Structure formats: structure tokens, C-alpha cells
Amino acid sequence: MSKVCVSDSVLYVGVNDHEIDLFESQYVVPNGVSYNSYVILDEKTAVMDTADRRVTDQWFANVEEALAGRKPEYLVISHLEPDHAANIAGFLKKYPGVKLIGNAKTFSMLPQFFELELPEDQKVVVKEGDKISLGEHTLAFYMAPMVHWPEVMVTYEEKEKILFSADGFGKFGALDVEEDWACEARRYYFNIVGKYGAMVQTLLKKAAALDIRMICPLHGPILKENLGYYIGLYDTWSKYEPESQGIFIAYASIHGNTEKAAKELAEMLQAAGAPKVSMADLARDDMAEAVEDAFRYDRMVLACPTYDAGLFPCMEDFLRHLSAKAYQKRTVALMENGSWAPMAAKKMREILETMKEITILEPVVTIKSTLKEADRGVMRELADALVK
Image (cartoon, rainbow, N blue to C red; front, side):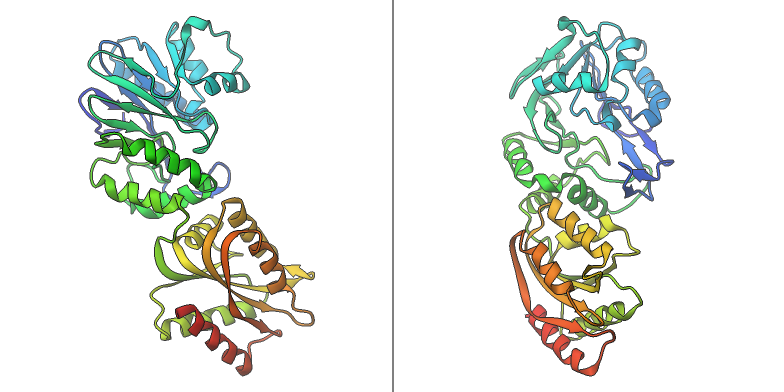
């Protein structure tokens, strides 16, 4: 069992996965991912969620070790996504008669994943604020719909003041790897939860009324200290407010000419005193990292060549990602390239205008094939405007 410490009576039974290449078949996870699960030992014993099918055998071994021969009374289902719920049917088979705790939406969705003949007396349907006593420990349930599925709920354990936060406050990365929390939590949040900022705000308001001493998410480390830091970041992220002052340059380049212009603009910005300049080559760099940086900083530059009278595909893909995740409240500058009919700025503007509270900065830089001295003059104007 992974030696992750929660408390004497709340045991970690999750599993690290270093074999996974793409989380949800789209996000690179160079340091793997953890599937977190917990056991609460009391007069009655509760298991908090299962784990992904990739780690089934190890997860069951961890649970068995934690239970030490006891039979669990409850399995709490915070979230039905398969990376947390894949072993529900197996758990019911291994521990006949165990009761499942979920909300009405949980049980309406459960047959979509498992063909179970579950007697009604094995279903414990909870609603907002309901409580279940395990003995010394009491579980209180709070609904968190669309954070980031409709059936999601979080559980607050009143004795030890633990918030079992489902996917909230989660991050990429296995627990046996030391890395900065914010970087991978930010990438996780904006790419997975980011569309649902209003729902996250609702959940944060519920959490504010609780005395939380520890947060136990379904991915990533258990948070025990400086909780205001993590909650503050979630508040900023879910309000779509910039986290940092800085300029993110996202560029797409076919033959390198747009890339050259983007890099020269970065140098101009640094010379003009920009607090931070970050760059991404959309054709080669991780798309999820680019989405993360777009949300992190308050200003962004899009640099793109015209391609088939439209946008180079990776730029269009990037903008569609931002739109899907509700990108807003930012200032954006445009650079376009075209050899005979530059159209990229027009096409980028059309997509940006579908988003909320986006200020498109002037001037727009138009390059004809290769960067020339006259273009640099307009770029300097743009750099000055961005820094101001």
C-alpha cells in the first residue's frame, strides 16, 4: 500500500499509475497520475470511491490490507467517471451486501456503466446536507453538479474536518513524484473542469461554511497545510480572472517565418519591460499547457499564418479549446501572415468575438511572407500597447 498518511482512522488506499501515457486519452502525464481512494475505520467502515481498471488488483489489495479482515458497510460514490468508479461491480461482488451511498443522479447513471441487480436496501440515496454516522465519524454530503459531471458530490467528515473533494483540487502526477502543485493542478483544472467555473464558485461557497482542516481529492496529493493558498487559486481560476500579470504568445508557423516574428515580438516585449513573456509553438508543444498559459496570464498574442483561406489547423484547434473552456476577461493581440491574401487575423477575430469580455488590441500586425523592417515598426507599436 502507498504510504500516504491521512490520519489514524482514515487510510489512503489509492494507487499511483506510471504506465499511463495519456490521461483521458488526451492529456500527457509525464509523471503519471494517482487514483485516490480512502477507507474510514469506525464502528461502521466506509470506503471512499474505487479506482481505475488499470490498477484494479493493487487497489483491491490496498483496501483489503486497510480493512484487516473487517467488512465495509458503505461505499461512497463521489463521481462515476471510470477512473474512480470502474471497480464498483467488483467491490459489490467481493463484499456482498455493502451499501452504496450516492445521490439520485448517481443511481440514475449507474446502470449506464454496470448491469447490476442492486436491491433497494443496498442503495443509500443522499441529498444536500444529509448526514450518515459511522460512529465517531460523521459524513455530510454536498452536491457539486457539473464539477465536472452532473452526479458529482463531495463529502465532509465532521470529526477530523476532512473534505473529500472529488475531482476538485486534483492534479496530474503520481504521489511519489515531487513537483510544484500549482503547475499541474492548473493544467488539470482548466482542461478538465475549466468550463464549469460558475459551478465551482457554488461549491466554494458551500466549502466556505465548513471548518476544513484537510482536503482529500481523487487525484493528486492530500492537502493539509496552507489551505487558503489552494482555495484562493481555485477561486481565481473559477472566476476566470488572470492569475499572473504576463503575456502569452501562442504561435503557429508553417515554414518558420511566423515563428521568427513571434520570437522577435517576445524580445521587444521583454525590452519594453513586460513582467513575464511565455511562448508556445502550437504545432509542437502540449496543447493542454498552451490552454493553461492562456488562462494563467492577463494578455495573449496569437500569431498565425493564413492556410487555405483560413487558419493553420493547430491555431484553430487551440482557439476551439479556449472557447470550449469559456476563455474570457483577457486582452488579445493578433499577428497574421499571408503570401497573397492574409485572412488569419479576420478568422481569429471571428472566433474571439464569440467569447466574453475579450479586448482585441490594436494594431494588428500583418506580415506578407517574411518579416520586414516596416513590419517591425508596427510590432513595436503593438509591443508598447501590450506592455501599457
